[in-house]
Image 1 (tube, rainbow, N blue to C red):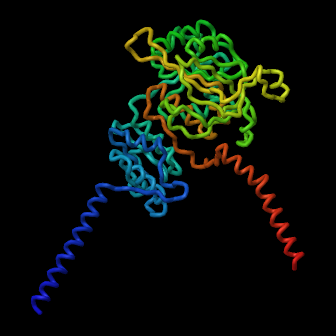
Image 2: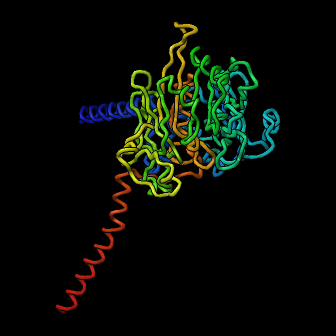
Image 3: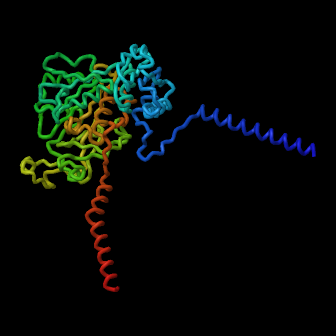
Length: 450
């Protein structure tokens, strides 16, 4: 009996030791290999591709001080987001501070009110914002305090190009602000007032000139590209001659047409605003790009296969309308003898041999047959903003910045693919009426039988 009791007690003790040890091992492993799983319908706790890349690329500590009232309810949303950021990088740290309880800390960071967030880099650089904590604001602040340098991007002026300070629908103020959030410094450059492209230029952007650039200006751009420079040309239809010939030198010729795409009407646009869902899977700018982009009033491009590479093409049903009379009358129709059938090339890239230093960095040129896709009134649609910013970052040499960025808090558009749109239209136009007819016949037959 005693031996049996002793054996039972020993087994129980061993069992308890094993259970405690197992619990300790699980806790140890969970602390060393922490994992998060977002099961919410819209991925509420899933960070964007850009945010994850930014955090994973951190090489030095970035600290966020959240000046929020000492109240669990007030801090809940901020805590969830900050913990999500911390999960992706050991260099990201954060803390809550109640400015009323710790006035000296608030004074140090020049904080005057609740719900102010200060992001501080390892070198002392600081960015702050107030109001609701959003992924967009927090990620942009981290980019600014962690980047090595500010990149200069020059927009040419003097020929009717887009105004980066303008707030009208066709201006570029919104994309200029977006570039600033990516650690660019956008400025306007009038080439006739300078002898050469500034040495600090990371990218030159020629955005929708209404008139041709002068030969002297084109020579400056030619010398710049042939010496390893990077440029983006956005050329609208039915404009320019000598500038088109200049681009053709590098294997990308803008065609004298306007792209017609009747599918765009289903997206709330018109038939002169082609939709793009097909992107090159070979190029860094577009290989992982999956958003629909819209290009209001665009022309197609004809790239030389030996010099240039395709980035984006329109849908099969589109065509390049070359008749200005039909366009003016608003009654376009495909003409096999004059028009080109889709899919059409809308964006292309060319690599340029560095003639000044054959061993040095090669020049890069991207051409898009439209400039309005990045204008104030269109930049928030689908992937327009991401595509423009990815191009700017790639040209500037920041490949790690190529990503899908966090959406603004109030922007949650529903975008259908072409097949989904046809399915919705079929159900709405044919399916529902047919269902009502079947139900009506069935009810009528039952009434007669009864």
